Length: 490
Image 1 (cartoon, rainbow, N blue to C red):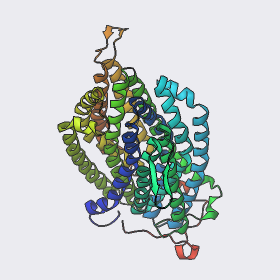
Image 2: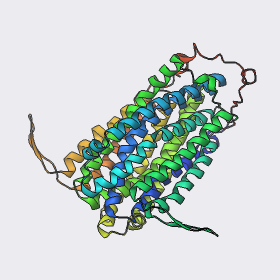
Image 3: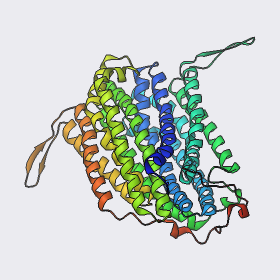
Image 4: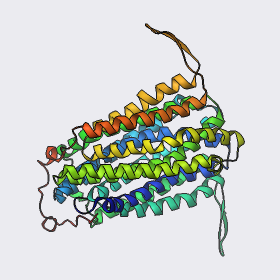
């Protein structure tokens, strides 16, 4: 990303990330598709669990945001051995953090479900699902670490191919484990799987992510993909761990701000009944496709910005961001036009309940036009993260969710009256669940304006690798160190 024409380089770096993220979304879409064949309560249960499980996954994304920044800047500066050490410290940190979060999630699973408004049969179905998802957290963290390490070095294709295999395995397992399908084996007979409902969706995800994680660790140990995991580097290196935490914690808080806001918004929607909740869950899954695209381009932008700052070319880093943002917004605008034109078809893929489809049509017609702006924000956040300025990306998430979205939902969706100083009595508009849909759109539009102005005027052109260069493994040539690391063309 430091030489040559930017658009083709960015495309080569981004398309495997886009496909990889879309395949990650397949996990959720496949679960929703097959769970929709069980009951509306099962769909509502998985819908409620999406923001809760994401709250924990966002911690992994915070750690790996730091990994991308540090690895890409070391690679841009030609310091491959230091990049390898960052990878090892990332693995160490993710193991400790994911284990702790999985234990906490399992210990307080009942309280968490009650907090987000799960009741009755929805609570039972959600509990069966979340218990398995929490067990899969270490696998999720390690795969994020593996992908971030290769991405920082410029290799986005290897993780993509593992996602192809992992997502394919998940899609195959889902109907067998959720609905209890049978498998016919020649000369042996038919073996019927237990019908586990939502728990089966969790088990399929657990097995698929475990497979991807094992393969990813093998790839890192083997080397030859831009970075390599050296077992000797797994001893704690305080300066590098300090940099990972220092750069990563704002990204983690960023994820928590998004996740807690998602939990709050899901709780708001749950007040309007199972049909609205199911429509929200399906709508969010469709939105997650746009997040997959814009998030992937944001990740590619982070790599491009980080490598160019490491190479001392900040103007090129700025151009990378401009190209990535414009291209992403055009693509998402086209996708939004498609679902606005055929909203019933988009919702009907997942459920045939007329009430859910009606709610989903309103969701898409209001929120889909804002997808391009939300995606533009995600790409600009990626640029800030690649520069190591993760606090700015965090502030943008807080603004989007807690300043623009949640208060707007409270004003538009519910019926209440309050007396404000000077102003006097103020009443909410009581639009119902439609007010929640508008709150999403308002947050996207307003945050994009802030993000664009901040990027243009902000001070983000200083790198972060100087803070952790010493003491650490010396930056010796790869051959001398016995490393197979190499910088790939992308």
